[in-house]
Length: 192
Image (cartoon, rainbow, N blue to C red; front, side):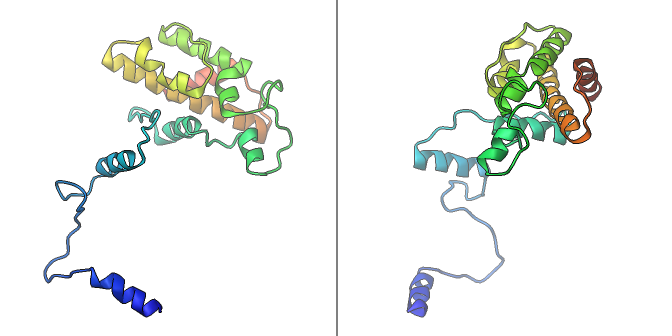
């Protein structure tokens, strides 16, 4: 039974002699491109991505990865761990102890992170932003600054602030090191 199915599937395959090459029949040029596959998936599913994360080559990869994972809501916060049925000591934010620790709370709702953002925005000379979601912070550079180079630099600082806040949160949890806004800001300045 399985042999017959396999032979049926193989009957549609044609082979040629010569050097092997990679081609993609569904792409006009025949060359495989990730962007073309993404376009085909979007067309096939009729789903347009809501937003996509923008990488910045001016920051270390580890900095970009923290912000990317925050963008995707994939950081291991207390909320994320409990959704995966992993025991956590407390579901509350260890920095402020007022709300459940989620990605959005940690980076936008926690009073300490809000203070860090105020200092960062003042340092970068951009207006304060009252963000509700991580994506608000990650998209702020698009409207806060008009100069292309300054826009990229500001975006790098924003990504670094994500890393600094995440690092401070982990130092508190794992090393019992208090989160001090001035220290977090100094770390952000050094990394930026």
